[in-house]
Length: 76
Image 1 (spheres, rainbow, N blue to C red):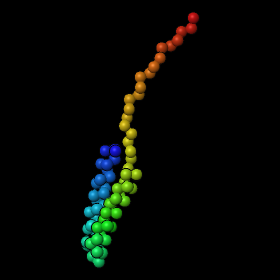
Image 2 (image 1 turned 120 degrees about the horizontal axis):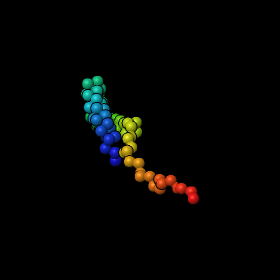
Image 3 (image 1 turned 180 degrees about the vertical axis):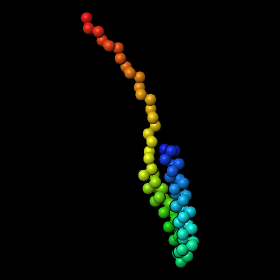
Image 4 (image 1 turned 45 degrees about the horizontal axis):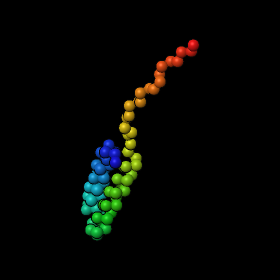
């Protein structure tokens, strides 16, 4: 697992979960608690998947290998 990518994914999931919960409480009181919880969970997981796919994945920089046989051959 790439820890760098999760630095972006987890906070975005938290923002979506909090936002969905607040919107359900303030604007959609007629939604039952069970359905509201399901909506929040599904929205949070979906946003996590989208963020995982869309946020950049930085490859670890590996040093270049040492050159082998760099001596010039002399002709006789």
